[in-house]
Length: 319
Image (cartoon, rainbow, N blue to C red; front, top):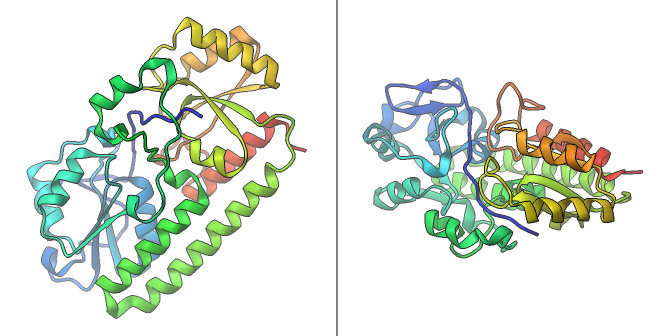
């Protein structure tokens, strides 16, 4: 399986211009340091982290995102205002290795509660050998130096493991509302367990186990459910694959009964559609859930994952 970090585009709610942060809830800033309010203020690095914070924190937290609408999270350069806001928050929830600017800001902060999602589940290597470009990408972006795949949120089981860790951290940091955080975490983990069951049952009996994507983001998901992901490009999905890679994919598609080339809502579908046309294949969307936009097939993580499952079932010939 070929899994390589690519540029991310994370849309969210409107930017809180005064702080350079993106507010994801209707709550006002809630940390004592940020405004002496009665809420627990959490700064999240990007959508999958913010979603966890909102689901677990509920009415007791105010969640803001460091990543503004349309930004590429791993290229994020935190402003002075964002750094100040981070320092004033009660907690930060991030995925170390994904956004160097965030990692640096957190390292320099004196926050009591720093929650690194990468430490809450096992990170795996899914290979970065596509087209021989992995080394070049590793030099550019430190998160791939070890070959670790950051897309843990696309596996409901791993996401649940992260959720448990976040819930425990919230309980410790804000003990007054520990019971609520515990209850919300248990509910979220149960819901993720149900989602996992949907995937297990939905992908149990398929005509093929191989799927093609523009961007190798689905290594954990593929591994969890006994599938094989083949990526058109291991780098930026907008980069052009080599002629040899295209020929290889076309040959593989025919041999493995592949019917569909998947692309994403946030990037160009040009390459996917070109390859699909050449190989007489269909195209469809498989969303890495790096952000929710009007083009997303759902309003949140769960609804988009369910749409992903249906897309996979159709493409793989589920019975």
